[in-house]
Image (cartoon, rainbow, N blue to C red; front, top):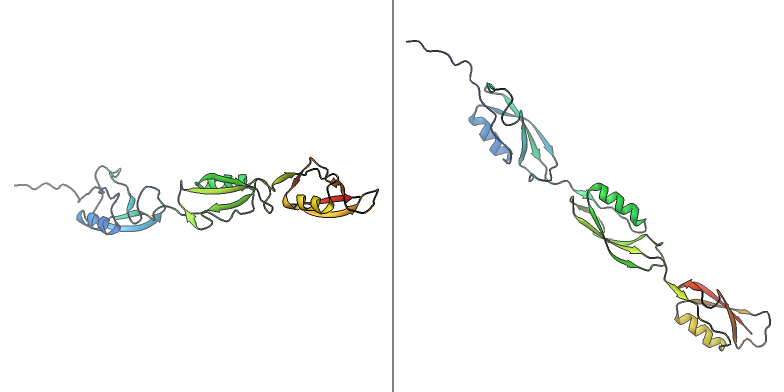
Length: 210
């Protein structure tokens, strides 16, 4: 009776995707393979610690399989890649939006407010204010509309103290000057900027008195 050789032992690479390194090691040992180089990469879909793929991959291109003791490399997930938010307060919102979207984050404007310290279109605040997020997470922004504008009222011939009080109640800083024709200074004559002008809240209004 003759015994015909089947040739050297050959095995196929098992499907190791989704396995832990320990599980993959055991699965490879069952077909007489060993774990080779383990490479770790970020993955948005494979949980941390699980195998993304093997090298050679599952269903190796060699139809006859691989010989025992072949080293099989593993690409293992590090989990989702953290994305730094950064500090954008005081900076241009459109620049922040473009940069964060380029990183893979979403951007939403939740409010717009007047600000005496942040230029129009700048960032007043954002949430989260620091740290890291993951791809697709949202950063919420409060964007500046610049200083609040208030109409300068007419105080023509109002008593000086009353004119000053009116302007200060609107948030202006008041400075008193003599009008070209000056008598006692008891009455307001005009203002600079003039009545009807839109001026920044907190700006200085000069009252000319007669």
